[in-house]
Length: 342
Image (cartoon, rainbow, N blue to C red; front, side):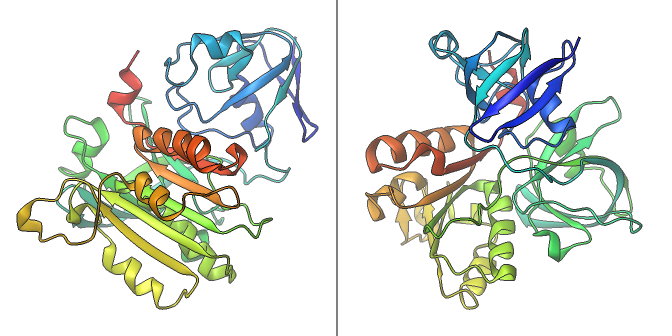
């Protein structure tokens, strides 16, 4: 028997099959609930249960603690409805989300951007355009059914292909292949678009774009989208890395600044060595935001990168700088190691 799930305050309603997660049911029916990893590891899909009962599958305590679950919060990515539900999720998107498709993709080029980052250019089938929001991601479906997720680093108008930034994770099933045996013209199977990380254009608030490492990829897509659409809201990019070479497209950002007068750029390095000759901002990237913008109540923040960076930014921006929690949009990059944590 299918169960009915209502989302407040948007009024969206959809149904879930027995043993189907809330998020899977929402995606299947085009209801845009917020989410990130889909593995119970990042907490991006957490929302408040107003009515009904939910049973959770395996998930990490950092994504949903026992106290939060007792207080009525649920993770839609691993929560299964046990009755009709009413949930509160203020970031739910309107009807008309782009269709999720499986398709073959061909490797067009493999370019080293740094010692541990490769830019993949992927060609898609020409018979039907692949539509997505800048900031969303695709999943590579490996031969054994395992999936790996990567954000598009180009806005859709820059297609029809996809640009992806892949950081090498030694021992990683997919990244070892990318940095080793992968060849041009190779065929990979992908599915997408996924994710609720994209620019909300119904606001005039100034924007903070926060990236760490290859979290820059979807931020780059957002910047391209803003430039293409003529969006002139003030925006500042804070991009953090351990060493200067981790800011692997610094030259691209500086070139883009010349064409986008409302965009500013603050590179931040946390562990520069003397031989790097670094004279710019140092420390944690989210702390640089707080130093420059101690009051964020009138801003929107789009943050992408390692979970520790995103989680620290969310906490400190809201608690210390007055950011509205509903104005913090995030995509945490979950690695194989992150997924394995209890």
